[in-house]
Image 1 (cartoon, helix red, strand yellow):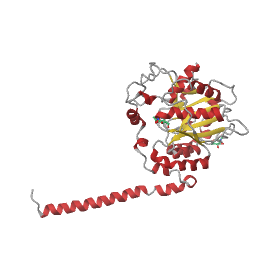
Image 2 (image 1 turned 60 degrees about the vertical axis):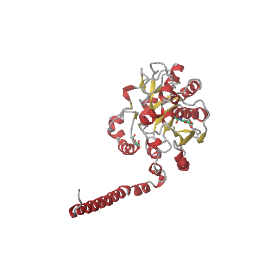
Image 3 (image 1 turned 45 degrees about the vertical axis):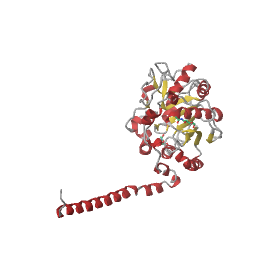
Image 4 (image 1 turned 90 degrees about the horizontal axis):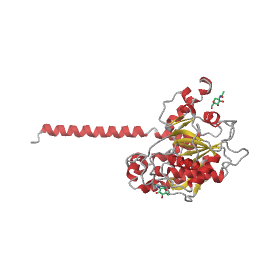
Length: 359
Ligand SMILES: *[C@@H]1O[C@H](CO)[C@@H](O)[C@H](O)[C@H]1NC(C)=O
Ligand SMILES: *[C@@H]1O[C@H](CO)[C@@H](O)[C@H](O)[C@H]1NC(C)=O
């Protein structure tokens, strides 16, 4: 092909067009980033924390757990968790459960260190300790170490967040999906050491909607008799271990040879009596800990010969549910719910007790 003035003119035009588009793109990108500034300043009380998610995270944090698992779980050793082991409590609140009245309900909320946005949403919604006036509720967020060492330097942000809210319980293990069992067990160890008076303990993930008054009055029933071996939630029965390594909940035969899991409560949220916490912990010292925390608690229950108590009417909804005020008014926990959605859902939900049929 030979160059001509026509080609040259076309080339120049294309060049200009590209330049203009690039400039437009850059402008658009800058525009898109702009609203973040004012947003951060709106939340004056906690303006520091929303910064955490904006700092680029290493791939090991951003990967979805599914992919991460398939890569990590090549060796069966990965399905076993290092426990018992004396992991240190790095941020602690020894007197959380001290006070005039013993806690009726202790909420152990599982978040990762970088989930400051979720924690803030929970504090102002269902995690508010004063939300059910007739009973004493205490809240703690259980977390481990930033999973990527690149982010360890953000530790000071966690300490500031805790100084303001007094509700973090940080334990010295890497906060990864495979270590979730440690998170639950260390939360329960904390209960055994510092909160034995709690009547009920809720283990709940940070990405849920919780209806505290329904949970307290309908499920736990403060007026009822004590139930020393009570545990309830969404109960899985006759579940079979997944044997293919690419499955999210892969379980190597070597680690768990039986063909069926004992009944267990799905990990997104279950609630148990304080007495049962001590019993589960005692058994957990003796049997091999596996990375599926809800299955592991089920294994402990089996050793204790305790069966989870069925809950009525699917009040634990763990497969997604569209928000509807009066529907949610009759549920205990819905999973999953994003922090941004939790905020508007909660605002609307306040009208439930005056506009919905009594539960
Ligand atoms: C779990 O935490 C321990 C202690 O920090 C760490 O050595 C281990 O690598 C973690 N496991 C996974 C799978 O991240
Ligand atoms: C309804 O719920 C809101 C928010 O939880 C609470 O402030 C209010 O006192 C409740 N009203 C009644 C009548 O229970």
